[in-house]
Length: 267
Image (cartoon, rainbow, N blue to C red; front, side, top):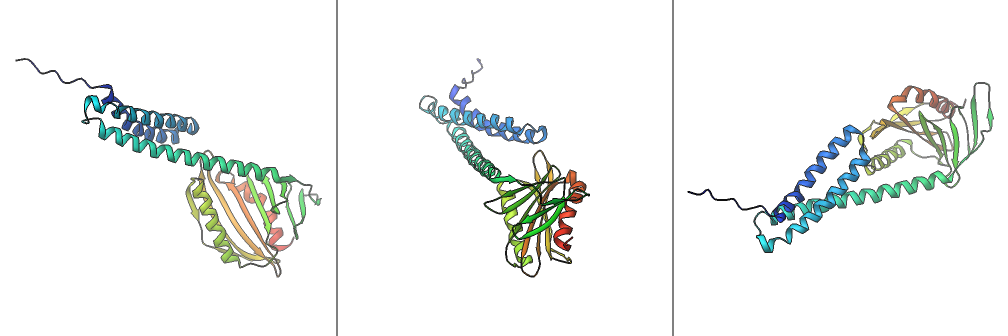
């Protein structure tokens, strides 16, 4: 008795199978990319696989007339849906990232370096402007955004943004709003490991208020701290945002101490 010869698998069957296999390969690549650190290259390879999966899914459907639905229709439709969804997510994230990059570049262009008002023997510099006078560590580079009146102190271990409200605000409620805004921004940029402490009080000789400790995990940098402060005297409130990587926490706090003490105690 002759053994029956199994039917040959057509190209349409293979294309349908490849269409839904592509997303599996993509997920494995993305998992590998997190460990290998080659995130950009992996993402472009993943995009290519999404397009390949879509194309093969559509091509497979054209073979139904010749080979029938069995083994073609279900895997092809599944592959098309998953790859289309992944492509939509990729394009949406790409457009959002590009918009953020353009916004950041625009904000950077508005920054202008300015000379400090004075420098003392301990390399402590003084800034006067925007209704504020404060001292800061001379290791910082000072820049000001003239449009938003935001003052930036920049160092590879520590970045601080200082801004005057030009009025009194409720420090606790304002910190809650700042924390909510930072949380939304971190999530929008797909940062993980987001942390937030309760509002803690700050007592000073000149200004008092509160602060919130926040943080997030940034690819390529590790865990980043984002501490928010609101300090007020009898007529005005000042906002401080202090960003620094966990790996440089000691140096960052040392640099930041001069500024915080100056605004808090007036010296």
